[in-house]
Image (cartoon, rainbow, N blue to C red; front, side):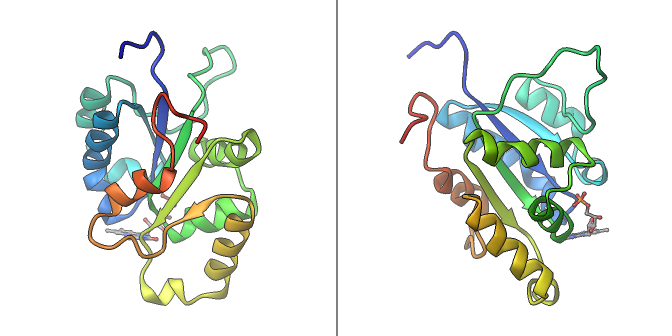
Length: 170
Ligand SMILES: Cc1cc2nc3c(=O)[nH]c(=O)nc-3n(C[C@H](O)[C@H](O)[C@H](O)COP(=O)(O)O)c2cc1C
C-alpha cells in the first residue's frame, strides 16, 4: 500500500547499556511500516551511534528542544521508550519536562498517543518505592509499562503498542 505520509513512531532512547541496540528496534518498526524518529536523552548520546541511527532512519536524532524559530517536527503517532532508565521513568511519572525526550513524553498521554515504556532497571532500583510508584502512576495514566519483556524486549515493545501503521485506531 502506498502512503503519502507515513505514520511516525518516536523511539525515545535513554542512557542505558542496551541503548546500543536501538537500531534493532528501528529495523523491526520499519519492517512494520513505521517511519522512526529517534529521540535521545542528552545522556544517551554517549551510548548510541548517532550517525548510524540517522542513516538508518533518514532523520536527525533529536535530543534537544527546537529553537523557537525552527520548524515543528512531525507529530508522533506512537511512542516507545526503550531502553527506559530509572531516571527517565521517575521523571516521566512526575511530569518533569526538562529535556526534549521528557517533553515528548509529558504531552503524549494527554494527546491520546499510545506510549510503551520498557525499563532496563536493575533489581536494586526496581525494588525502590519511587520506581514502583512511578510504574503505578504511569499505568494509571494509560502508559503501558513492560516490566518483564523476556528475551526479545524490542519485539515485545512493538507488540505492546497494539497499533500498526494504517491501523492506528485499534
Ligand atoms: C555504562 C552505564 C550503563 C548504565 N545502564 C543503566 C541501565 O541499564 N539502567 C538505568 O536505569 N541506568 C543506567 N545507567 C545510569 C544512567 O545512565 C543515569 O541514571 C543517567 O542519568 C540516565 O539519564 P537519562 O534517563 O536522561 O537517559 C547506566 C550508566 C552507565 C555509565
